Image (cartoon, rainbow over all chains, first blue to last red; front, side, top):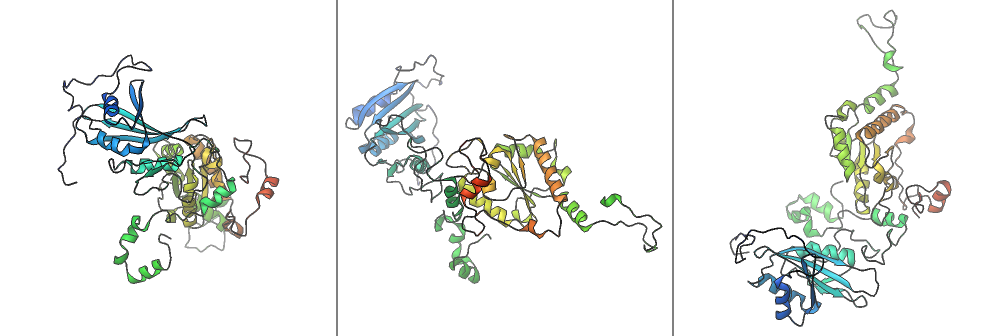
Length: 233
Length: 207
C-alpha cells in the first residue's frame, strides 16, 4: 500500500513486443502450451499433477497442499507475474466417483498469458483448500460464492460466509449434484424461513453505518437502539 | 352517472349566487381522485422492469394515467408494481416495503415470474408474490408488453372505481404468515384450489 501506483502495461514483459493477434485454427486438444505450466512442473514437482491444453487454454492440475505457495510464486516471480485473478469457481461432475475440482483463472497482463489452475478434491474427505486471499484480495467474494454454492471451505479466508443465499439458508449447497432443484424443504417451509429473516440481521455491526456512528447519535436514540429497536421503520 | 348529472339551473334550493353545482356520491369522487392519481412504487428486479420503464417513457407515457410521479419511497406510494422475479432473499424486503406503504394501497404483479415464479421453479425464487403480499391485478407475459401493463393499470383503476367506503373489509390487511392466526393449513388450501403454474407439482399451498 505504501508503494506508489505503477501502471501495468499489457504485453510490456514480452521480449519481442509484437502486437497481440487473435489465434487462428486452435485445435481442441494440444497446441502451444502456456510456458508457466512447464515452469510450475519444474519448480513445484511435489504439487504438479499434470497439465493439458484445451482450445488453446492451458490447465494445470495441482495437489492442494501447497496451493498458496504456487499461487504466490506465480504472482510474485518476475518470470510469471500473474497479477490478475479472474475467477474462482468449482466443478462437480455427474459421475459420483469423480473428484470435485476447484478452479482458479489467472491472467498475467505483462506476459499476456492465461492460466487455469485446478485442484481435485476427493468427495469422501472434507472439502478444504487454501484461500488465495493473502495474494489476491479480490478472491474474497469469489471464494465466498464458491463456499456458498459448493460448500468448499477456503482455509485462511478472512470472512467465509454465504454471499448469494441468505445467512439462515439451511438446505445445503445449491450447485452440488445431490441438491434437488426445488430445494430440500417444502415451499411453505422455505417461505416461512425466508420471511423470518431480519433484513438488517445479515450484516455485522461493523457493516452498518448506524453502528459506526453509534457514539455520535443523540442520547434517546442510543437508548432506543440499545433496547433492540430497529431503525428505518 | 356522477359528473354527467348536472342539476338544472331552475332548481329552487340552489343559492342564487351559485352559478352551477353538481350532486354526486362521495364514493365516486373519492374513487375518481384515487384511481386517476395512483402513484406507483416500482419494485423492478428483472427484465419486466425494462418494459415498465418503457411504459413510463414517452411513447406509452404512464403520465396519462395520473402515474407521472414514480414514488421511490413506499411511504408516498399508492400502488406497488412488482416487476420481475423475487428470490426468497428479497421476500422480507418486499414484505417490508408493502407494510411501509400507507392505506389505501394496491399491488400489481407484473409478469409471469412475479405472478407464479414463472420458469424459475427452483430453490431460490418465490413462487408468486401472492404468497407474501396481497395482489390486485396480475399482468401475464414474459415480459408483458407496455400495452399489457397499461391494460392491467386500467383494470386496477376500474377496481378502484368500484370500491365502497362503507366496506371496511377492503382495508383489512391479512397476511399469509404461518405464525399469525389467519394461517390456513396447506392441506386445506390444496383441497380448495387446483394445481397452477407451469409445473405439475406446483400447488397453491406450495407443498
